[in-house]
Image 1 (cartoon, rainbow, N blue to C red):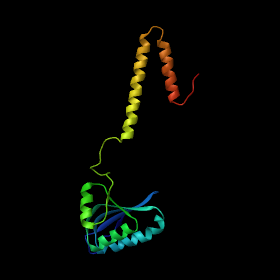
Image 2: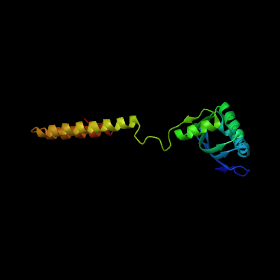
Image 3: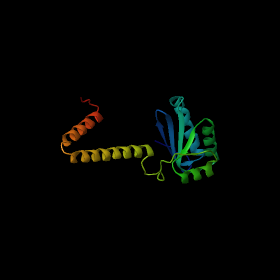
Image 4: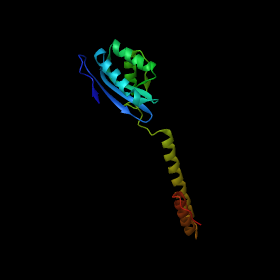
Amino acid sequence: MNDASRGKGGGLVYYMHDGSAAFRFKLAGDLSQDTAQDLEQARKTAASIIGRRSMVVDLTHLTSLDAAGRKLLEEWHALGAELTVVSSEAQARIRSMAGVPVTLLGTGRGASGWLPSRMAGLWLSALVALLLLAGAFRAASRQPGAGMSAIATMSAVRLSSAGAYCN
């Protein structure tokens, strides 16, 4: 974390995250002439570390922006930085302040709490398979002499699903 509020402005705090796919900046506070120079210097210093990875700038917690801050964001956008936010409210606020394209990531408070559809599908498939297996076991146990074959079938299913082989 770096507290860039040493200037006369209201202050800017920024975090730099060195990830495998992208180098990320997370900004919070006021991006003004006083703080923009420090932030640009941090980007230039990190440029050798960033390399060919993308640069992602989270603007969600940016509270104000002056002409120097707007210019810096425009320059970073021109360099290929992806400017992001995590809520639609922040997206509207930043667009009105900055006038640059801002990507909504949708991982903030407004994001859905539901399971992703693939995960839900897998859970549903597993549940259906268990219900079908239980029904087959119940039907087999009602037939005289078929109880042992149903138990053997159940054991074979358990072993085969665990990756073991049975003859």
